[in-house]
Image 1 (tube, rainbow, N blue to C red):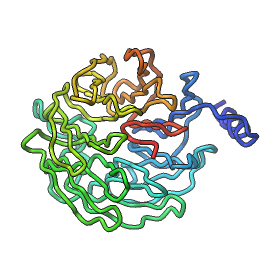
Image 2 (spheres, rainbow, N blue to C red):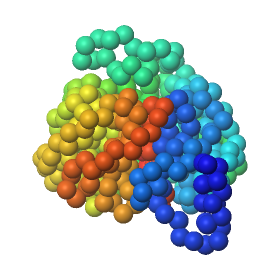
Image 3 (cartoon, one colour):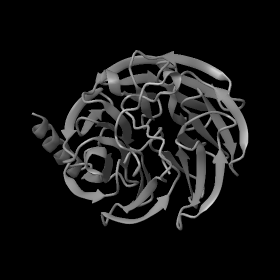
Image 4 (cartoon, rainbow, N blue to C red):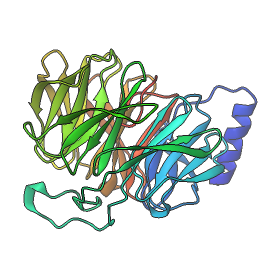
Length: 349
């Protein structure tokens, strides 16, 4: 039945029928689930022909989906409409976070990571799905050309690089490095290290990183100190703001007036206004391990991937209330949409 649905979808698109908005969700024990945003139904499953997908991105033109596959140390490049595999690209050990910029994919890899779950150490312990080796070997950010399917170069990050962001004019890449508590800023083309921001005076374990729509500030969540830091355009500290437990995914809304933070251990989606970062609301979540999220293309809803409850939670961004849940099996990790929209893994540049 799912193959018939996929065939009909391709046929409709090729005939010029307007495409309804879709969400694409990676599951660590599966592939990509395709969700019709209007009906809130899973309408197809895409076989990425690799194992352990986590990070997911979508090309600027919407033609390709890209997943980072931990099990095989590669990327899958998928034709979005047909769901067919275009190519696999080897990128390095333990690829995790994917960001697309122009025709390039940037993916964090962790050559020092063993892949073993961390020892549980009270509040400082990471989620049992994550690696936590604290090895100081620098991570590498692999740079892949989507159209040619070739790895072009690597940018050396810090140990255990997690989040990736770009500055407003696209000349710099900003990465969060968990194991040495730094945010490092690099020249996008050369990879040269331009600046290091030490988060230790403000907290522990930088993970999510996001630029405001106007490019004036950056926010990085500090997972093990239950807060986030606000940095200016020159990556100087402006403010530290408390959150619930274990904040990870972070994104501004399209206007830049509100900031959304997923605090997984508190089972909250927290909403802040961005003038002074005063809390607007805590949205309670029943889901477990809710890390990454995306706004829908019309910005009226937010879709939150909750890996340990096998679901996508739906939040109304006007009322700031949970309105539903979409079952997605296999430990969902990341979510993006087409048409492209803002989220913890994507933006609309």
